[in-house]
Length: 284
Image (cartoon, rainbow, N blue to C red; front, side, top):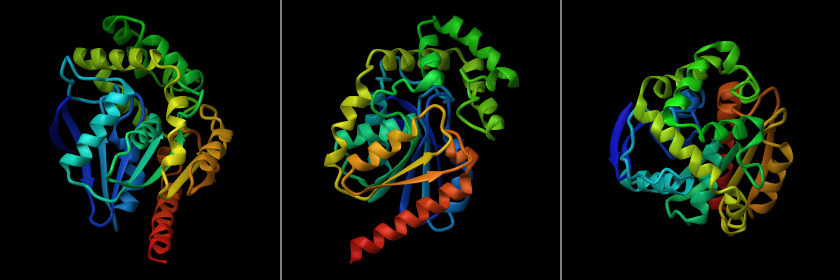
């Protein structure tokens, strides 16, 4: 993993491959390894960049005055794109990462050429489902009490509960166990995680506001949804695709929300096809 010092603190990121740039964003209590499967495929002919954002599974604590609201983290992504001088980016977001993509559209981030929203927070499903609502409620605890609760996530039966990762991924338990290590081992990461969760709780209308910006994004847009998603309603995928002027929807079976974990090869192929087709359309 590489590192870069941004205004909020040190960010780790994966940067591999050569070709058109794809930047991949993860969700709450996850890190860049969410995307390991798709990156292994896409990096053959694309530059794949996946930052580990300060969303609870990061390993470097942020500055005490860092803005850890989702709007603040979206601005941090824009800063990251600027610092790496990435152009014509295909920005991909899953789970909370998709919320960040929508917020970046609202900020009219100039470096974004295409977007992919993969089973993500949208509209009034924020925080999303039983899983998201339970997690955000834990943010009311002190960082110390939050850490004690998160210690239970070391146990697979607890991780597989619907209030944890059980409804987020069918096949990604090894990854979820790894994601829990920073918050269970580092006091400063627990502090950051609680700050993020409290900021989410303070803005229940955030994604409804973001949805109003989507019709202004007149660039290629792909919505990929898990047809068996139990956290992100499938009808939200259809609504997002309809709001985006160049949006279209692809559904993936045999997957929960975390499609990069449950169907990495299928997702990689869909993203590659989307980029090729939109390139052809641009040249036409």
